[in-house]
Length: 326
Image (cartoon, rainbow, N blue to C red):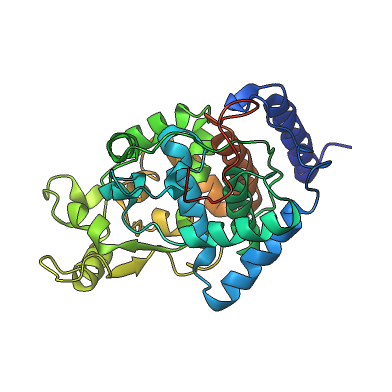
């Protein structure tokens, strides 16, 4: 009798765990039982706190996932995006961090953990756990993540964020380059883009696409969608920072609708629209649109690689008592 797809997925994830524990994927000193002896309640505390916040604001999961992505892409998953500075610009001053919300939620979760486990759990780990739980709470896969990150001790650079965070007009080439640098395969990179199934896109980030030259534009945007975007995000709008469009019809649910939308020519951002037609990524888009289980499996492995990239462990970094202060 052959292996079922579920059994294959279990074996695959186990192999990925072993890779991270052995230092693969940039994980270094991370482990799956890191807080077993020092704060075994941490995952339950973070999950309960996030559920409570999400009851009053159902957009919290999408905000947590985006917050994690923007933190990890600048100088590794070190909670540097949470630091506030007074005398110099912070990472949040980067124009590419426009729309980042709910940093105060991580501060709240940290304060809850501190009551039970004072000065034992890093803000970086809490941010990763919150993003992981955000996916599961929205209907996505539950992802086992290794822990043991330390927090950054250096003031974040807005100029570094400007140079490393993707531009709104990013295409497939740039996307594969960014996630490939984190050790992701093309399949995992396409799966990670599926995080766009949650939340909205602000008009601020769509204007570049709407202003693009007409040449070749038919490949990127379906005419009906273009009309809708121009109505929702009129050029010259006085409120581009607050105006937005939903990423897909199920913007509060983590599912494979993002890929179905993209295949219909209704991807909101340029990279969303290019994925189905690119020879490297198109087959994975079609498979994920047909097989949500395959999407969840690839997303889970890509998530672990991103969350384990460029982390500080051991004697590196610190455990900040307040996430916004060094």
